[in-house]
Every structure is written in C-alpha cells, then in structure tokens.
Image 1 (cartoon, one colour):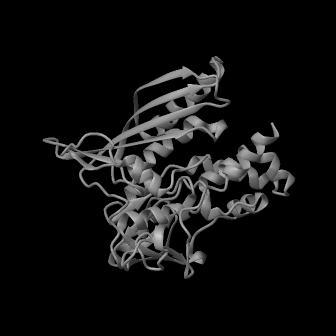
Image 2 (cartoon, rainbow, N blue to C red; image 1 turned 30 degrees about the horizontal axis):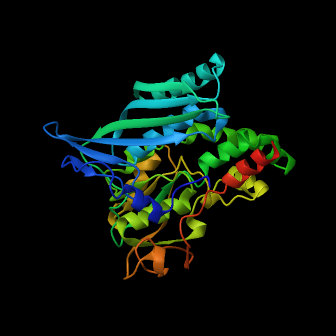
Image 3 (cartoon, rainbow, N blue to C red; image 1 turned 90 degrees about the vertical axis):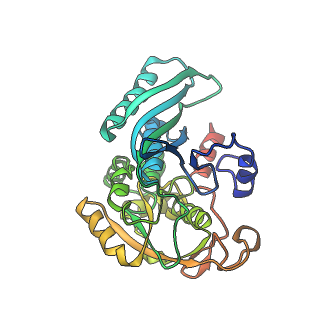
Length: 342
C-alpha cells in the first residue's frame, strides 16, 4: 500500500542499518528526518536528509528541493548542497528540461548548490520520480526529540500548505466541480511558493528545543513523530491550529482533513515558555505567521503505539482526545481513485 511505513516496521528495518560510526551523532530513527555527522576538527556538524517526490506531478522538482532542504533546516542547519536521483518515464527532453529547471531555480532561491546526481529513464513509471538529498552545516543540531515537559508547541504558517497547492493544481477540476471558486484555486496554487521552512527555522532555531516539519500525514503525523522522538506527550488545541480559508475550501470540497495531509510549509517547534514571545517576535520580524498550539507534557508509563495510554510516550491529544496514531495521508485515496479510473 502506498504511504509511510509504520513505526514498528520502520524500527525493524533500521535495526541493522549501516556500520557503527562514532561521528554519527544522530542516526536513523522513527520521527527523525535528518542525520547529523560530527565534522571532527571543523567545529560544525554536517546535517544530511533525503526524500523522494513523485506524486505531485506538476511541480516535482520544486517540491523535491524544498522537502529535503526543509528537513535540514528543521535540524537547525543551513542547507548548502544538493544531490538528486531523477527517474523519468520516458526520454522526452521537454519533461527533463522542466524538472531540471525547477530544481535549479528552487536551489538558487535557497542559496544551495546542486553538486551531483543521477538521471535515467524507467518506463515502469507514469510520472517523474525525484529523490533529493540535501546537506548543510550547523554549530547547534536541533533534533525532533528534544522537546521537554513544559515547552510550548508553535506552528508556523498553517496546516496543509503543500496539500492545498496540490489540490489547487493536480485536482483543480475536481475542486471546481465541487464548487471551489476559480479565484480561490488561483490563490491556493500560489501556496507552492510557501512550502520552504528554511526562513521559519532560521527565525526560531536559537530558542527551540526541538524542530520538526510536517510532510506526509500532515500536522497530525508530525505531532506524533515529535512526541515519540521526545518520549513525551503533547496536548494540542484544535482551534489554535492555523488553517487558511483557501485550505479549508479545497480540503472540504474533496473530503480531506487539513491536519492529516501533506504539510510542507509549516514548521513545528517546541520552545521553553520563557522564550515563546522571543520566537513569535522573530517569526513576525521575518514576515512569517506563527501560533502557539499546545504544550509538552511529561509522559507516563507504557507505550502509546501498543497500549494506547493517554499520557504514554508519543501520545498526542487534540482537545483532550488521543490520536490513534499517525494517520495515512488523506491525499492518497484521491490519487488512487484517479488511477483506478484510468
């Protein structure tokens, strides 16, 4: 089935990944999106993140760069280098040029150099697949698992920024048929220009104990992942979660929960209570919306994934109701239904 591996399957797959290396200060783990490698003698840490993109057909190159760079930025680093593997369904030079131009333009906007990669045709595909690796450096690595009890949870921009842009482009006709005005769809398509969280992370990383950017599965999955990595419980207020009107219109039209779908463009941060105003002021100075959405609580005994305890590590409660676990992204059924019709 299309989608992310669950935490148990992922843990089993990662149990014997690679050789032990003392320079690796953050290796693969559920809820962590980037690795950290200590550059001995350099005084900095190298942060590496990789992600594949295939389903957002019209903007695969743009989103591939942003998604990988977001993971690096959400670890407290400045993305600097990119390498990517591009699989194409055919040898159409126009298609290759489109994706390559998207990658180049987006990398330049972020100040990143594309340093290598690989491209080939795989006729089993029906759309391009771009797997991007981003690298950057920092003198303070911020993991997803550093949230402490008492920290406040902040979210930038809003839920489902990326999904809104996808709905307004790849599913534009379906949204129109469901009554979404053309002007709303035009505005929503522009959300693609906001999927980077590089400036968001730069604004709050000094105050943050933990950072995580919602991607597949949206804000709900990001909360579960961050709570699990931090061995904490999160309490969130639904009304405090920012959702733009264009997002609500597009998601309502096609029956998608804004909290459970692609969320690139938002950044989730855990910040000590005494530094919340500092973080929000820094976001405001950068022209970025930010909202306090909840609090980090000390976890009780047990395991959320297996016992469902309300206060177990990895538990997320929204308005007091615990999430059953990380949801499957709600855009997948739309893609699957379209493929079934073709």
